[in-house]
Image (cartoon, rainbow, N blue to C red; front, side, top):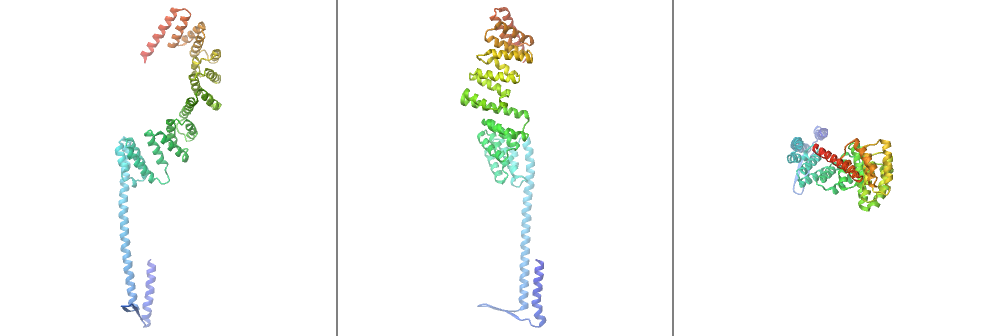
Length: 398
């Protein structure tokens, strides 16, 4: 700008000084309908220079005024920003103290000027929800949504978290499904998905996210295995509720060999089949399970299976005794099986061997019943006394 002004002044000086030096100043005539203005070239140039100087002065004044206004606005904005920072720091302490009302107030005050206004509004929404003010929570959430622009994941995560807190489980599940489309391995999304799917009985969806939970290291292996079993049991219950025993067996057959070999699922399946009065299928699952791997839970189910082939169960029990030793549980279970078809003497021997290894109130009661069948009333009375004393001792210890 300064260079242009200097160049302009040099040109004007040339125009003015040239004629003066040459002795020919000339004149300028400006004529209108009512006015005639006549001046020398030098006078016109002086007028133009003065006009330019006035314009430049006015421009300088205006620039200073606008600059001062910007500084003033910047000062007020900076003051609000510093205030928002102080409020945010205080609010975090209030959150830690559990003072949700004060925390919400501090977080929302001057939140638009905070370093992370979206975070302020989201935390304010959760604080409002903690104290049961759903209206304020929704207002803060919507304001955060307006400011979030393209990064909506934190807002939607908070929305789902609030919905779960309000027991709006199906709405939360819908929100989780949308979040998983854009952030399938986000740890917090997966944690919230676990809650939403369990609450809504979406067992298939819960199984689907388990690989992502493993890759993102969400929870430990034990917890993930428990979730898997919970999901399988949920699907099993749904099949039984929808189609009864036949639907349950069809569902079981559709599962992979690895799934059918899960002991916890075998136990649950057998219990459902016993409930559905399908002892033969239940017995087959127990025998297949014990053939692959011994488990006390499968042995405990044997006396409840009223199949037409109890000899197969007795044979399996004796085989387990050879492989794993004559444990009290195996002897007791064998005694119960023998009682069912009247082999009283063998049943008595089995219960006696079980009790010789450890006292048990149920075995005392069963052995007393067997002694009654064998016409040994004194021994039966003795077993009942032993069982009663053991029960009283156990209850007093608790």
